[in-house]
Length: 220
Image 1 (cartoon, helix red, strand yellow):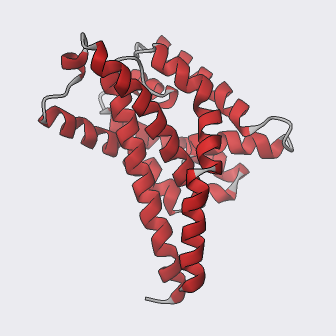
Image 2 (image 1 turned 90 degrees about the vertical axis):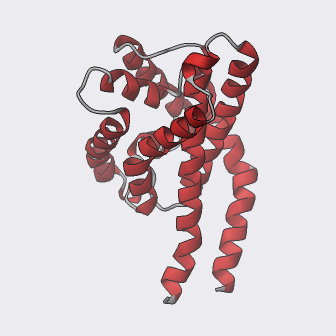
């Protein structure tokens, strides 16, 4: 293994872990019954009217959205973007399958607030941590997540990432509502607070992880 690949491997592993974490967070939000993150909400709603699964539709939509985002921001392209674009939907379905295998389903949790509320809170935190981690790996990011970064960059910082993210999440939630997806308190919380929570994780826990990765790269 040459030096370049040796330095890249830890980031590839971390970005894969980040997307698995994302998948877990989204699955927990689905189980809570309080609504998912706005992007998933939109894709669940639209895909319910099409002859394809949620995972397949999300992959196709990501590829289409990637074209204009790539034109505006070449950093969007990378193995991190590909993993998120092509596999995240399947990671979500994988965790839904695992939960169902141990008897935890959306229907089964419907009347159990003692399980739904913790699933909502933990799901939001897990989701935001996953977003912060895979973006920090700097191996490209899915087009939906790069949109807010593009707005911040092209506005020369006048529109901060966290507020750009709030705006695009609100739009996605509206589309989800119009297409019959579940839009509830969970969707609203994620739409309003994903940006600030991601920023918090990016500056704290994820920053420490990235320092460790950079140290291992320097020692390689």
